[in-house]
Image 1 (tube, one colour):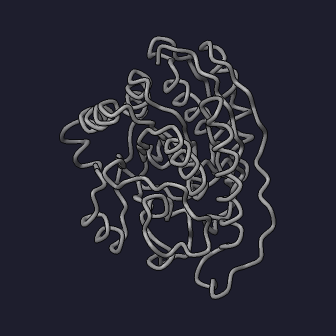
Image 2 (cartoon, rainbow, N blue to C red):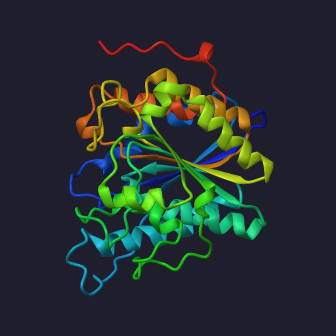
Image 3 (tube, helix red, strand yellow):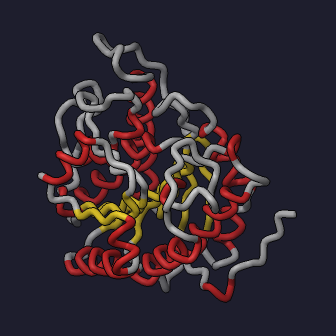
Amino acid sequence: MNTKSNILLIGAPMDCGKRRQGCLMGPDSYRTAGLAEALRSLGHSVSDLGNVQPRVMPTPPNSDKLYALAENIAWTEALMQAGREALKSGVPIFLGGDHALSLGSVAAAAAHSAECGRPQFVLWLDAHSDFHTPHTTESGNLHGTPLAYITGREGFDHFPTLPSTVPETNVCIIGLRSVDGSERTALQTSKISRHDMREIDEQGISRPLCNFLERVAAVNGHLHVSLDVDFLDPSVAPAVGTTVPGGATVREAHLVMELICDSGLMTSLDLVELNPFLDERGRTAQLMVDLAASGFGRRVFDRPTRAYS
C-alpha cells in the first residue's frame, strides 16, 4: 500500500453473536493497545468515530432457537449504515466485538462497491467457515453465519435486505480447521475458495493468498478483510472464546497482512473475536494491532520489540 489512507475506526462492542461474554471490551482494548498511534506512525490519517449504538428492536416471532436475534439484527442494521457512510471517505476498520459484526460490515462494503460499479471480494481469515444459516446452526450463535448472509443464502428472513450480495466465487477462506458437518456439505457445493491448515502446511500460506489477490486485482475489485483472532494459534493469541489448536503462526499472519498491503487492494477491515477477559497482559490485543499495522505498511524490520514480563 504505497499511498496513505484516511482510516476510520468504528467501534463495534457487539457481544450477542454468541453466549460467552467479553468481546464487548474489544474496541477499547484495541484503542488501549495503540492502534490509532501505530497507524498514524505509518503516515496515515486516523479518525476514531467512537462506538456504534444500535437501536432497541422487538424480538421477532419464533426465534427461540437463535441467541439474541433482535440484538444481532439491530447491530447488523447499525453497522451497515455506519460502514456505508465511512466507506464514502476512507478505509474503515471495524473494531470488534464478535464475528457477527461482519453481518453488517461486509454488507456495507458490498453495497458501497455496487454503488461504485466495482466487484466486492472478501478474504476470511478464520479457523471457522461461518457459513451456517439460522436454519442450520445447532448452537444458535449467529457469529457463525456472516458468510452465509452476505453470499445470499436463505434463512435470514428478519435481517435487513441486502442491497448487494457477494458472489461465492469472490470469497476466500484461509486458516480453516474446525467446520461443522452441515457447513462442510454446503461449502463443498459452493464456489467459495477454502484453504485449511493442512494445505497451508503443505504449500505455504502465500500461494493461495496471492492467487486470490491476483483475481481481485484482475477485475479492479474492492477487498474486505475479516481477521478473526482464532485465525492465529491460541499459543500466541489466547484471548478468544473459540480456540482451535494448530492456527497460523505470528510469522505467517504478518506475511498475510504484508502481502495484502503490497497488493494495495484492501478497502475495509474487521478485527473480531478479541475477548480481553481471556488475554494475558494484553498480548493478543497487541498482536492484532501489530497485524493491522502490517496491513497498512509496517515492515518486518520496523516491528517494535515487546516485553511482557
